[in-house]
Length: 163
Figure 1 (cartoon, rainbow, N blue to C red):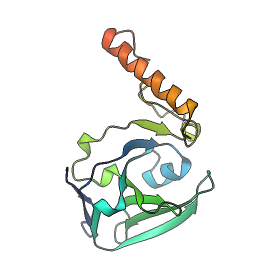
Figure 2: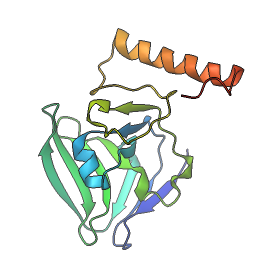
Figure 3: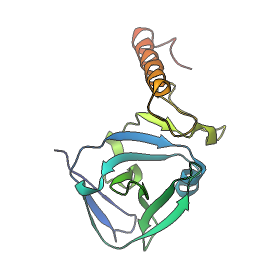
């Protein structure tokens, strides 16, 4: 089992994550752009039960474009974004990658809310992308297959597969 540590900019909040992330995601929704300073939010989806937090956090609730109530936890002292979760699934956290002590091993597996991405934002074309929040079904399978084909093309002809 891997162990990751992280916290906020001022050091008032620290956490330790001992589980395995379920998914790496880049979210381009406007709410994530607000809290990140304009960029997408990069997060690992983790189980709350695998996380130990010390220090004071505050929570800010919003209603996302999807209609879901979303909580965003941040350091009560310096405001560093740490976690997000929905009211319906509080045990599933989006752990903000920027709060990790070593974020270098993060690799997004998909991008969501591309409909809100700014025209100047760039994205690896081999990453499955969704205009909104993906629903399980044929569409998500198709996007993953297309992304896999792009990755394969990069292996076969790296000079021709960029775009």
